[in-house]
Amino acid sequence: MIFSSQIKSQIKAIFSDCDDTITHQSLLHSKTLNTLERLKEKGFWLVLVSGRPAGWADCLMRILPIDAMVFENGAGVMIREKTKIKTVRLASDKNIVEERQILQTLFDSLKKEIPHLKLATDQPYRLYDYAIDFIEEPPPLSATEIEKVLTFLNKTPGITAKLSSIHINYWYGQHTKVTACQYLLDIEGTKRSLDKNNVLYCGDSPNDEPLFQFFPESLGVANIKLFWDKLQFHPKYLTTKEGGNGFQEFAEELLT
Ligand SMILES: [Mg+2]
Image (cartoon, rainbow, N blue to C red; front, side, top):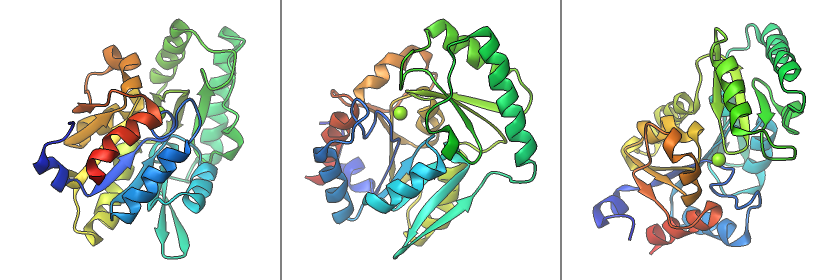
């Protein structure tokens, strides 16, 4: 048993990472989709919190039984409003053209050092951030190369860089997954009389770490053990299974 009966009755919302948390080896399995449908039917507020592009958020909001989705690490959110999907851009558009040119220049500089470096295949659908793929498609980057990229980006003034389970995302601005979740709690949570104490946050990677710190109730699917030593803030709960199977594992407890 993962949750006490008190915590079980307290949790009214699931905020979850997407890649390798609801997916399993990159696929969304039918059993996990069924779990999402059952959570929704039971009245849970369902929010995906992802580094994936706005284009993915538009698609997932239209085909999955979710209420909202944070995209591009907090650059914006999409919210279901009856039959419409509302998009809220939280990142600043003020200098977006110049900033994207600099993000490209940073990638070009890194590629001189690491010739097999590549952008994620979903890069064309991103509004704000850049995503370097380190393992979604071959060739992968080594741990040393990932560290080199993160160190270079983190020392660049104004840039935020985060490691997901598949990409290194970097962008201008102070927005993060936390600021976007806070926005959703302020706007949508208030309407539902819910605050962060009613949320269970689920993730699997270092870019989920600020959420493990922010939400009192947080959970890692078992594959987070790969990154355990990199984390300063760990999830409160851990599943025994990985990815989507881990998501199903804890959800069954909430559904029974
Ligand atoms: Mg992930």
